[in-house]
Length: 160
Ligand code: FES
Image 1 (cartoon, rainbow, N blue to C red):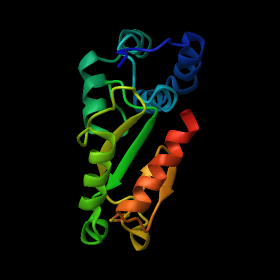
Image 2 (cartoon, protein in one colour):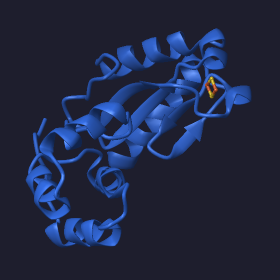
Image 3 (cartoon, rainbow, N blue to C red):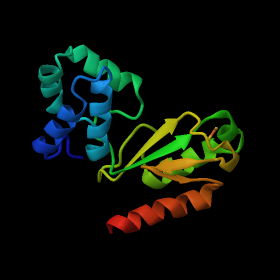
Image 4 (cartoon, rainbow, N blue to C red):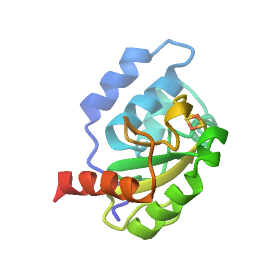
């Protein structure tokens, strides 16, 4: 898959200016950039260092600590499987297995075509609906193997 994207620098600078001066600016800027590209492209890191006056190591620390931020390209659709206790006892493992088989990748990986990334996440707060996955910002609950694959098929249709 591609290792980078065409960066809209006007948009990136707009995001930086929006938060500049806030003590959590770096985190919020990286999150907003991730919302656009699904990761923080490496070309952006020196710009953050220069404009915010932060150390490069801090950028890497933020990316390591916050699961929603990645420095590696991720899929157009981020499929996050909740592995919290309630979802675990309701079969989250089988959901992960079904996804891995269907998409032919392991948890933490992205499909060759750059469409899907599978991630494991902790409780996302809708335990009663478990097992639960999110695809980008959409939540899907009460899943079993076949309904999970139906969900994935719907996203595949979006791009075919
Ligand atoms: S344990 Fe999965 S939503 Fe809470």
